[in-house]
Image 1 (spheres, helix red, strand yellow):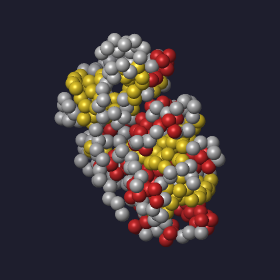
Image 2 (tube, helix red, strand yellow):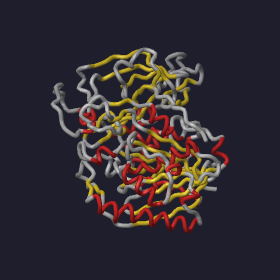
Image 3 (cartoon, helix red, strand yellow):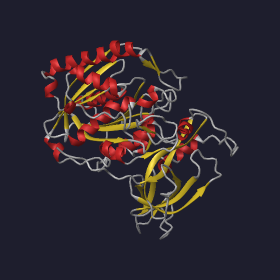
Image 4 (cartoon, one colour):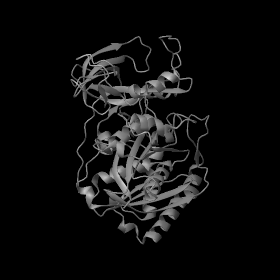
Length: 476
């Protein structure tokens, strides 16, 4: 039996909403912080998905996004390292199309079904930008979804797929474009999504011998709320069958949209429920999953879509978001010199410390220190330690400082010393913070973020973030 064994998601903390000065819309949308991108969000979703699971059992990773930070450099390899996966796994990037997310899930299913792997982690993340204050920007959102595809102990069995490929230039972006481009709305709707998706769905139903009434929840792609409702009616679904779309709360998360809706549907699915994921983009993918009895007692992700959605903060000003996304350039009062290019050799050499976030635990006395040293500072034992991954451990602020003249994007720069549960202490930056939140003893977690981008090199590291708590999920 091949299917989904675990799922997870990530939604950034911040929103543009009705209270945001200059946004001029009642709709909310999730926005990635200035130090987040599709890779960092994929790491967060992957960690959510792998909660309580043995990471050494993952045999492959597939990363999907239309907004990867590199045009030539495998992002799946970065995500795998940050999640501390084995090195003897296969890694694949899928990009350049809105249905990259369902393409990636299908590739994971095929790899497991063919015996290429027993468990494959699929992570999908996107941060697409539309022209400032335009319809695309209002409807879009940032987020990520993740699944473990496996051949045993699945909570949702794969029950068939169907794909249609159709060359349709209704939405596109070239390497030099900052924003998504779109063609005339009526053409894109009638000759694009409302022609292609029903065709793919109809063939899937014929092959599976089902009708709309047999579907418990459908995770359906559409560019905005109006066309989503119209397409769902066209396919013959009632309101109770439609997985609540993220419009008005998170937004259209691009390649991650259908995976995130599917992850949300799994949060409340009951044994026997038939779930469909239907994507769009130069064609359409229809993926079917039937919840197994194992879903009733399966472990939930650490947060899931509902948890991340509830733990939010609305930005006070659109100008803050514009500065994060470099929609417009503001005068830099600090007049700082350009940062030096990071050393690629040093990045490689310090990968365990900076990307995997390994500390060392002394085998003799149990003392944990970061960064790892040959000599234990507690008992002075030489070369007798084992690696400890700190990225998933709860922590709290031991002390902190605020630097108002550092020239940071998010002034003031908050630097904290955090103590980890079970031992270990790290000096790092804090992000996703409000100044009135920061205090000694504040509960925090660690989040994989960008430090800076210089000479095209994306320098990633771990930062402390306020610990976000899980929202209650109703069960049927």
